[in-house]
Length: 131
Image (cartoon, rainbow, N blue to C red; front, side):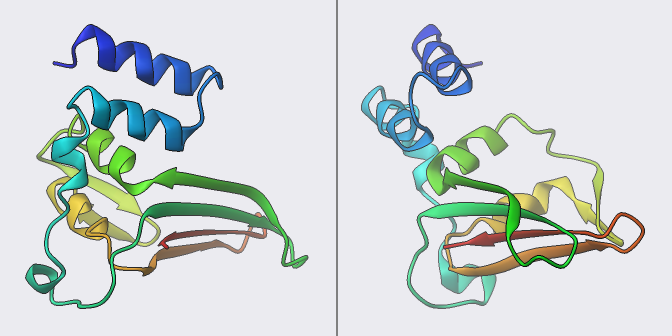
């Protein structure tokens, strides 16, 4: 259960009073970001390379090539928030089921594309990557 300081910081980020990057630094300062910042080693996931620092989520509409939505979240904040997700069950991601417990492995910090989902009917594409 998060303490009052953590809840206050998350509310500041949600209200737009503090950027996500500043929120991650504040969480680190109060000790709440320590667990989130310790991503699984790249070797454990079978991937190697430099660590990424951000989760990038982009939504494209039509064929313009310009993102309609462009969200950058500090990786430590994304991993910290994932701690509150249920550890069991499945989530539908694109055309496949993913074990909820595996999501943290997707955020192991190694730069690269995690997922791309195309919706042909709506003409939308969602890209999620670590950079």
